Length: 226
Image 1 (cartoon, one colour):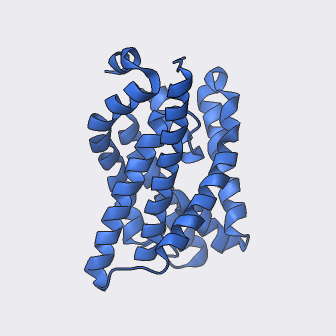
Image 2 (tube, helix red, strand yellow):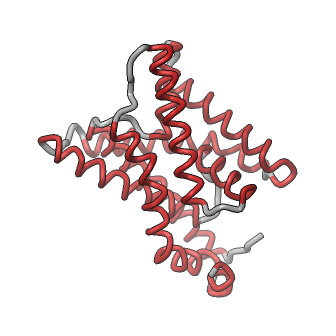
């Protein structure tokens, strides 16, 4: 278990919050681009449309399943503090609302402009994921499940994230076609984000990880990670 000095704890919390905020900005930009809902929300959205339940209720339900999956995968290694993932997911939801308020209805004109916004959202979300994961506090449920899978399979997190994102999007797509008889919420932007986000995280991680590790855990921890 890596330890931090008091000032390093402050850095970790600030970096964690900054990461969540970047993710929220990226999600808001993606929403305004209107090219499909983000991969993390695609399955809850489709379930909401099928069941008629509120999206927030379906998000909590799906995220709870992700946490149960972590318990099954990690067993005794699961840290019970990670049950607070639902609390931080709620805080993240407020961040998204705030980011959406900041952006308003801003959207670049033409389809090409919306693609630019989609690309920007993927980069910003990837940066946010990298920031808050490097702080090593509490991950969001989907990333927590991805981290658990990466730990069990001993595969790099960015590679596992691509598989998880694509699987979730595919499940949402199948449910939408089978039960709604149409594509609802899942569009080209959803699929692009599912395939590309993990690769962008891998690119960002190389230069950024040593800097964050040094700030959060000191030089010795940063060297141990390299």
